[in-house]
Amino acid sequence: MEETKGHIHPLSRTMDEIVRIFAELGFEVALGPEIETEHYNFDALNVPKNHPARDMQDTFWIKGVKETVLRTHTSPMQVRFMETHEPPFRVVVPGKVFRYEATDTTHETQFHQVEGLVLGEGITLANLKWTLETFFKKLFGNDVKMRMRPSFFPFVEPGVEIDISCFFCAGAGCGVCKRSGWIEVMGAGMVHPNVLLAGGIDPRKYSGFAFGMGVDRLVMTKYGIEDVRLLYAGDLRLVDQF
Image (cartoon, rainbow, N blue to C red; front, side, top):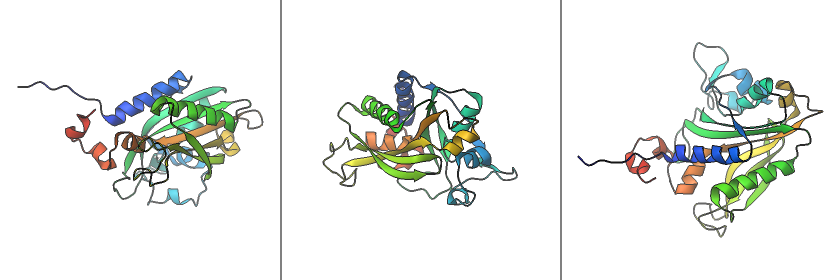
């Protein structure tokens, strides 16, 4: 019988590479629970009680366990980490998250994120920009460009969307980037004072930034995978390519 070598799944490969790069930038790694309380998943992150993300359309609630959910993002670890650590610190949180939504080529009920949090005295948006530009150049090469667009997330103020230049067409415009030359890869911003207070941090003394990236879509874009469901199908024809 012919022997075959195993292959690292592209999701695992990319998650490991992301964590390694941030470790080189002085970040430590933390892991959080996949079953989370409503407090950490929503309340402590300044998400209003009437926010649509709390509805059954977006969140898996644990039957029979009051105010408990499958985490919808890795952001709950922001407050959990603040509660047990004194600034300054830099931390990344890789992990699986869950959303109650219909699956299609770009959406799954489970996917992977990497959260980042930096807190200290005098931290500004310029620190966020440098950190992410350095990260993307290490991940995709020195030719990649990054831009920041204003956006809104309840747990940051100001909030930004982060785009990188399409590495398939070098920004010229193609089907992958929808002819725009740019690919949206993450949300980020300065940590909201209410989130700092929820974590027991004095916002008059400390400031910080946070970011969260969807790893599955980075994998799809980097390796030209057209359907996110292929990453979870268990088909070795996909895995054996890597």
